[in-house]
View 1 (cartoon, rainbow, N blue to C red):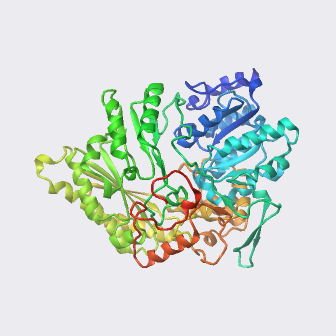
View 2: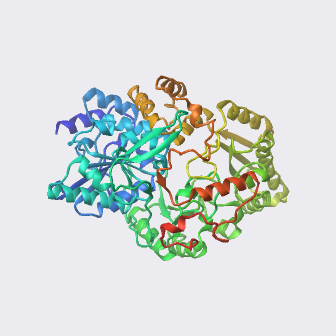
View 3: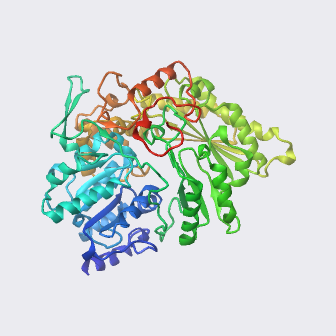
Length: 617
């Protein structure tokens, strides 16, 4: 075909052509004549990022297990490829078939990070699909959004026809089945399909809701425009993770990806209730997979891939109630097969010598922990429930086990934070150094000790106890970053931090409403793409775009939100009640902690969603 000839010529002139060739081992091909619904899974980042995403792998597998549905993949091209696509008139295509994305029936975007919004819209432009849902005609595909960012989908609500709130394994099949049914019985039109889809639990059709604003710019109300559709969208969950489909084969990339290994999802949800953490709230209720199911999946994936590392994934892997049983089951064969286990989300208060002996990393000689704050007072405010003694005990185990580098994650800009708390970050890092030298010299790991302090900027995310808080201004964040840099005096401590300018824009997009759509669209029209990459993020361009579209960034960040106002994300029911979040906010200001769900139920409300889980009753 002519398109293939063009692509062959183009691929010789771009970096990493393996991003675009398709044809990977275990990728799924189907007979087009036997397929009734074609679904393009679009990941708004590069191939090597998207190929590492577990959600994409799961949903690709789930949809393709339906004989008459064909799910294919597409990723954001790198700028050199975009230039060639425009030069040769090549639209965005799917990796499996090479067909243009605009010819598909359904196109689903996974929105993992707010700064990927411009990339998603740029991909629509590259596919010759109108950005705004109101501008699409009957021949255009239905454009779907899902992923963690849709818990506040309002900044991009005008661009998506349909939004999947919550877990997608069941609902995406139901949406595809509805499409097939309506096409076969002759009742399909875009509007009729969306009207029927609005009755599926977990589906949000933004065009069916009107938003009114108060004179001060806050939201007055959401009003359904159609009879019979829900006033709030209840998120969708998978009740029993033991029975849900999980990939038996992985598409094997031709080029190196970010996470090139077997990823084993152990459970969903979190028992801890850190007050800054959106994932810990919106992924409730806690649901675990059983060790035998996990061990079978791991063995199957190993045999079908040959990977030499298995990463056990959850929000806090050491909180899995049957971790010993699981690791023992895996070690029965992984040692002999020279397959290493990695547990990337260990907590300080549950790290043990037994775990230390069971895990190894093929990437680094160190371990990572997340104290999050530099003083115990502030750790109590955010409900982290770890202490310096927990840190000392954990790094002592690590050093005695031969590890000589430790990475510590913190945040700055947290509610009630002072410069003393910032100085506490430096003190905490120095404590790790002191623990190393407290060991008798023969017992210290060779090569000395190093500590990396990585500090991100706090953003008050939706559906957290801190969702009403103000975000520190750019000047405040940069002052705190400078103060910490001056407080670190030990050359064995390396300090890295997140760009405060990026965090300011992220805060606007995370907490915004529908009025942001004009700004995002203008940014894309003027060339914005891959904003999640440092080399393509342009803070001044964002500020200029906000100014030209009448957006005040401080309205969404530094002013904070009143507990009485309608929040942009109030249209969504994530399962955790606002009453619970307000109680936790009050306890934060009182410096009081809340025990984990493992100790007793704290009444967050997520149990009403049902599901086979361990902690919620």
